[in-house]
Amino acid sequence: MEEILFYAFATLAITAALLVVNIRNTARALFLFFVVLFAMAGLYLFALADFVAITQILVYVGGVLILLIFAFMLSNKELLADLQNTSRKFISLPNWQSALLSLAFLSVMLYAFWGWKQHTPDWIIESQRQGTVIQATDNNIGTLGFKFMTQYVLPFEVISIFLMMALIGAAHLSRKGDSV
Image 1 (cartoon, rainbow, N blue to C red):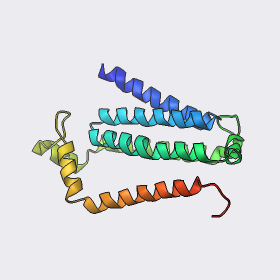
Image 2: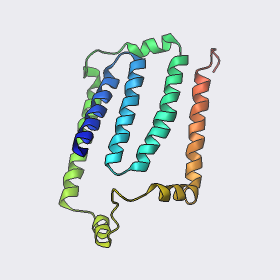
Image 3: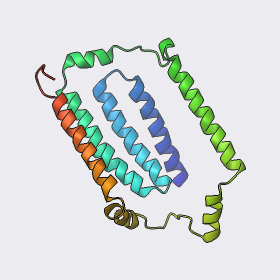
């Protein structure tokens, strides 16, 4: 059952992501981006990253995506008309740089994967020897919450200030008027 759910989330994420970059309607693209973020949160759960999955939903779906939707709803139609005038082809000739970059990234990922399989890093071997490997039944959220409110409180607050700046920027951009 887990394997079926994993492949369902992976297929949903890949299909929705491809549709996001190819669809011409911005409102539908935002909805599909919402689907991609939820599917990625499901994949994070399979990677035993439960805190990252919850953070994905709270921060990106609950914050950033809502800001994007508000910016879309409050923006001018002329601004969105420029975004809609794109090529209908999936891969067009002016985008050859992105295809080259994607192939380079794929080759780096494959090289790292094969290198990782050839030589297991020392920290993984040491963790396996000590028995400190994270299991699916471990409760990490309490430990992470304690670390966030003690050791990492300053970076946590800096991130909250950045999110507040993004909210103020979105409100400024959505204002009616020509003055900047």
